[in-house]
Image (cartoon, rainbow, N blue to C red; front, side, top):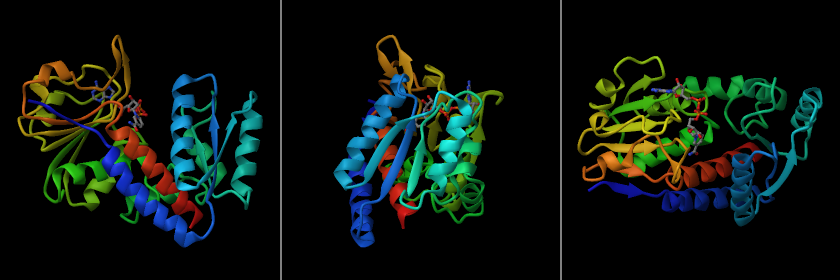
Amino acid sequence: MVEIVKGFELARRIDCETAAQIAALGRAPRCHVLIEPENPGQAAYAARLGTAAAALGIELQTEAYADDPGDTLERLRRLGAARDIDAVITLYPLPPGLAAEDAAVLLGAGHDVDGLHPENAGRLALGMPNRPPATALACKLLAEALAGDLRGRDIVLVGASRIVGRPLANLLLDAEATVTLTHAATRDLASHTLRADIVVTAAGVAGLMGADHLRDGAIVLDVAINRGADGLVGDVDLSAISERPITITHVPDGVGPVTTACMMRNIVEAAR
Ligand code: NAD
């Protein structure tokens, strides 16, 4: 039978470490969140961030992107220069005409908690991570929690985005895993995923993987959040593997809570 795992216990463990860091800091970290309030996904994520921050004693202030792109750029510049703010989260998608990497540059390496500023991304690529993108860090910690030491493990990543696949590949290389990065142009995806000890999928394509893509004993982190007819689903067709000995994360309560905890960790790291 397939085993479906949630991320709440690991998230609690990360929160405990973050609480200790805040106590050592001796003050409440302060973070601004920029959102598009009309976007239900962003509003829901901002609400989850708010709940997590309140529980840890992090001051989180949410504000809407400006209607005018030029005003948003100016606001990012202002927030980046603000001495009384530790971190800024820009929820995606950003307003039209604004790239995530450009936003990170305007905020500066110190205020960027998404790991997208060239300095933070460069540190990660060089094996000196300080603030890896929260989802990538969450996947690495979940993989360790479920599989133990990652050294020598065959790990196949499905999706090579800047916030999941690419940074996660670097984190897993640091853990001495053997990493394969696949993407939309990869030929014969199953030939890669079938030999994996661990598959991390973040393509955003419901039903992308089924019984023919996974071997017995595999651990699957399903990062994707797709809207299906019966609610939220990941990239893996759960019905196709329901009788197989495979461990897979719940959608959305697998990677999601751990990502939120890692974002809180990154805010405190920025404050330190
Ligand atoms: P993205 O669109 O930036 O990247 C998607 C990646 O998947 C690309 O590299 C693309 O080449 C690849 N891909 C697309 N179709 C593919 C296919 N058929 N085969 C193999 N690879 C394919 O997306 P993103 O921002 O990285 O988000 C991906 C998914 O993860 C989305 O569903 C998003 O909602 C979800 N997500 C979840 C969390 C979380 O914490 N749970 C966080 C971030 C993103």
